[in-house]
Amino acid sequence: MKIALFPGSYDPITLGHVEIVHRALKLFDKIIIGIGINPAKRYMFSLEQRKRWIERCFVHEPRVEVRAYQVLTVEFARSCGAQFLLRGLRSAKDLEYESYLEFINRTLDEQIETVYLIASPQTAHISSTLVRELITYRGKLKGLVPDAIIEEIYQSLA
Ligand code: ADP
View 1 (tube, protein in one colour):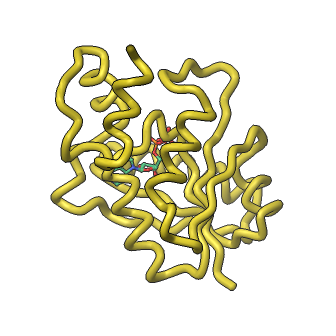
View 2 (spheres, protein in one colour):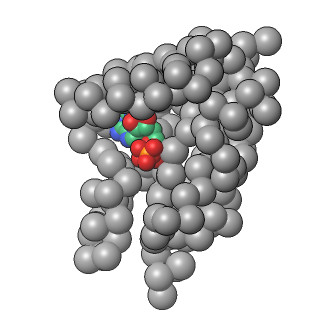
View 3 (spheres, rainbow, N blue to C red):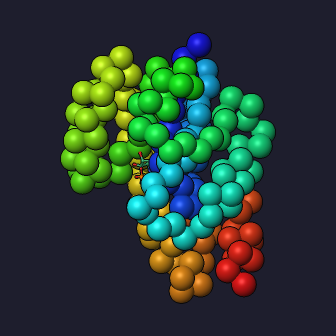
């Protein structure tokens, strides 16, 4: 069984992430969306909120599982039985950063292969950072995050 771990912060999940998962489901039998917990990082949304919103987006997709982790990404991949890491690429800047990450991950575990999907033109401009800025200023989220979670994002701020 081909299992891919899609690691990230998902603060919050966007349509860019959802797009990558849907496309990757054609390549892998199972996708584990891994929410990496970095104690040094400050998040806008709690782990529970981020996890719940991701789960809601894939409620009808039994091949997607959502898990949180607080160890090295390759270690977590190994513990899940994932042979692949999945990452999305939006720009040359992403590619540069990802090349560096891949170098480190490969040094740590050369058995785990990273697979990159290039963002589609419809969602390549979306980032969680942009979404968080819009949320701060109560901007419209339609077309940036899944409809199913927009309401709750705003309620969480009330
Ligand atoms: P990280 O902090 O690890 O970058 P993110 O939650 O921001 O975590 O992103 C997780 C993964 O999703 C990364 O591989 C990132 O490049 C990818 N990603 C984020 N936004 C998009 C998008 N709009 N299109 C394609 N991939 C994306």
